[in-house]
Image 1 (cartoon, rainbow, N blue to C red):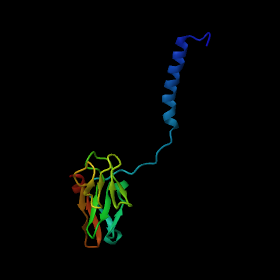
Image 2: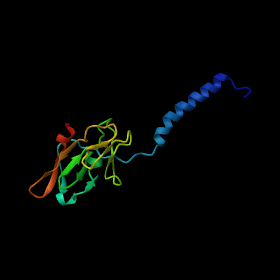
Image 3: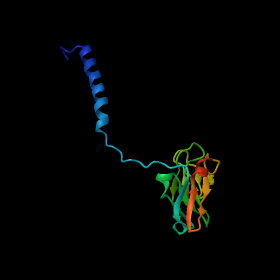
Image 4: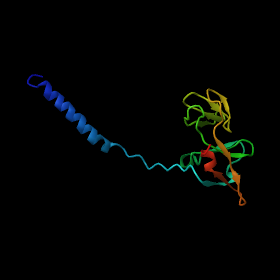
Length: 145
Protein backbone atom coordinates (compact mmCIF):
# COMPACT_ATOMS: atom_id res chain seq x y z
CA UNK A 1 0.00 0.00 0.00
CA UNK A 2 2.57 2.52 -1.12
CA UNK A 3 1.37 6.06 -1.46
CA UNK A 4 -1.54 5.60 0.97
CA UNK A 5 -1.10 7.19 4.34
CA UNK A 6 -2.36 5.80 7.60
CA UNK A 7 -4.61 8.83 7.91
CA UNK A 8 -6.25 8.11 4.54
CA UNK A 9 -6.94 4.50 5.55
CA UNK A 10 -8.53 5.61 8.82
CA UNK A 11 -10.66 8.25 7.11
CA UNK A 12 -11.85 5.71 4.51
CA UNK A 13 -12.70 3.16 7.23
CA UNK A 14 -14.57 5.76 9.27
CA UNK A 15 -16.52 6.88 6.23
CA UNK A 16 -17.45 3.28 5.45
CA UNK A 17 -18.78 2.78 8.98
CA UNK A 18 -20.84 5.97 8.88
CA UNK A 19 -22.29 5.18 5.45
CA UNK A 20 -23.15 1.58 6.36
CA UNK A 21 -24.88 2.68 9.57
CA UNK A 22 -26.96 5.16 7.60
CA UNK A 23 -27.79 2.88 4.66
CA UNK A 24 -28.21 -0.61 6.14
CA UNK A 25 -31.24 0.07 8.36
CA UNK A 26 -33.13 1.11 5.24
CA UNK A 27 -32.24 -2.19 3.58
CA UNK A 28 -33.64 -4.38 6.33
CA UNK A 29 -36.76 -6.42 5.68
CA UNK A 30 -39.67 -4.82 7.43
CA UNK A 31 -41.45 -7.01 9.95
CA UNK A 32 -45.15 -7.38 9.53
CA UNK A 33 -47.09 -5.39 12.06
CA UNK A 34 -47.21 -7.40 15.24
CA UNK A 35 -50.54 -7.36 17.05
CA UNK A 36 -50.71 -5.19 20.13
CA UNK A 37 -50.84 -7.36 23.24
CA UNK A 38 -54.03 -6.65 25.21
CA UNK A 39 -53.48 -7.28 28.92
CA UNK A 40 -56.46 -5.62 30.57
CA UNK A 41 -60.21 -5.80 30.36
CA UNK A 42 -62.42 -8.79 29.68
CA UNK A 43 -62.14 -10.84 26.50
CA UNK A 44 -64.77 -13.24 25.17
CA UNK A 45 -62.95 -16.36 23.97
CA UNK A 46 -65.96 -18.06 22.42
CA UNK A 47 -68.02 -21.18 23.14
CA UNK A 48 -66.99 -23.47 25.98
CA UNK A 49 -67.22 -26.37 23.52
CA UNK A 50 -64.15 -24.97 21.72
CA UNK A 51 -62.04 -25.97 24.74
CA UNK A 52 -62.63 -29.70 25.43
CA UNK A 53 -61.07 -31.53 28.39
CA UNK A 54 -57.44 -32.52 27.94
CA UNK A 55 -56.73 -29.78 25.43
CA UNK A 56 -54.73 -26.58 25.25
CA UNK A 57 -55.47 -23.71 22.86
CA UNK A 58 -52.91 -21.09 21.89
CA UNK A 59 -55.43 -19.10 19.82
CA UNK A 60 -55.10 -16.00 22.04
CA UNK A 61 -51.35 -16.17 22.71
CA UNK A 62 -50.28 -13.41 20.30
CA UNK A 63 -53.22 -11.09 20.85
CA UNK A 64 -53.75 -11.43 24.62
CA UNK A 65 -50.72 -13.35 25.91
CA UNK A 66 -52.83 -16.23 27.21
CA UNK A 67 -53.18 -19.94 26.63
CA UNK A 68 -56.50 -21.62 27.40
CA UNK A 69 -56.18 -25.01 29.11
CA UNK A 70 -58.81 -27.52 30.16
CA UNK A 71 -57.35 -30.36 32.20
CA UNK A 72 -60.59 -32.06 33.20
CA UNK A 73 -63.52 -29.70 32.81
CA UNK A 74 -62.33 -26.43 34.34
CA UNK A 75 -61.11 -24.03 31.71
CA UNK A 76 -58.38 -21.61 32.73
CA UNK A 77 -56.40 -18.86 31.05
CA UNK A 78 -52.68 -19.20 31.70
CA UNK A 79 -50.09 -16.50 31.25
CA UNK A 80 -47.11 -18.55 30.00
CA UNK A 81 -44.34 -16.71 31.85
CA UNK A 82 -41.98 -18.86 33.89
CA UNK A 83 -42.11 -17.93 37.55
CA UNK A 84 -38.36 -18.40 37.84
CA UNK A 85 -37.07 -15.64 35.52
CA UNK A 86 -40.09 -14.61 33.44
CA UNK A 87 -39.13 -16.40 30.22
CA UNK A 88 -42.05 -17.41 28.01
CA UNK A 89 -42.73 -21.13 28.43
CA UNK A 90 -43.76 -23.28 25.48
CA UNK A 91 -46.52 -25.86 25.36
CA UNK A 92 -45.03 -29.27 24.57
CA UNK A 93 -47.62 -31.79 23.44
CA UNK A 94 -45.18 -34.69 23.87
CA UNK A 95 -44.97 -34.12 27.63
CA UNK A 96 -48.50 -32.71 27.90
CA UNK A 97 -47.11 -29.71 29.74
CA UNK A 98 -45.18 -26.47 29.52
CA UNK A 99 -41.40 -26.21 29.41
CA UNK A 100 -39.17 -23.20 29.99
CA UNK A 101 -36.41 -22.95 27.36
CA UNK A 102 -34.08 -21.09 29.74
CA UNK A 103 -33.63 -23.41 32.72
CA UNK A 104 -35.94 -26.27 31.72
CA UNK A 105 -38.57 -25.91 34.40
CA UNK A 106 -41.54 -28.07 33.52
CA UNK A 107 -45.16 -27.36 34.39
CA UNK A 108 -48.27 -29.51 34.02
CA UNK A 109 -51.26 -28.50 31.89
CA UNK A 110 -52.56 -26.22 34.66
CA UNK A 111 -49.21 -24.53 35.19
CA UNK A 112 -48.15 -26.36 38.37
CA UNK A 113 -44.35 -26.77 38.51
CA UNK A 114 -43.09 -30.32 38.16
CA UNK A 115 -39.31 -29.92 37.81
CA UNK A 116 -36.66 -27.24 37.58
CA UNK A 117 -35.82 -24.09 39.44
CA UNK A 118 -39.38 -22.64 39.21
CA UNK A 119 -41.25 -23.20 42.47
CA UNK A 120 -44.45 -21.25 41.84
CA UNK A 121 -47.28 -22.06 39.43
CA UNK A 122 -47.78 -20.12 36.22
CA UNK A 123 -50.23 -17.21 36.64
CA UNK A 124 -53.76 -18.26 35.75
CA UNK A 125 -57.38 -17.27 36.14
CA UNK A 126 -60.54 -19.34 35.69
CA UNK A 127 -62.63 -18.63 32.62
CA UNK A 128 -66.15 -17.46 33.41
CA UNK A 129 -69.06 -19.10 31.63
CA UNK A 130 -71.63 -16.57 30.43
CA UNK A 131 -75.38 -17.17 30.04
CA UNK A 132 -75.01 -17.60 26.27
CA UNK A 133 -72.49 -20.45 26.73
CA UNK A 134 -69.42 -18.44 25.81
CA UNK A 135 -66.40 -18.01 28.05
CA UNK A 136 -64.80 -14.78 29.17
CA UNK A 137 -61.42 -14.10 30.72
CA UNK A 138 -60.76 -11.13 33.00
CA UNK A 139 -57.26 -10.19 31.88
CA UNK A 140 -57.00 -7.57 34.62
CA UNK A 141 -57.11 -10.33 37.24
CA UNK A 142 -54.57 -12.41 35.37
CA UNK A 143 -52.07 -9.63 34.68
CA UNK A 144 -52.69 -7.98 38.04
CA UNK A 145 -51.13 -10.90 39.93
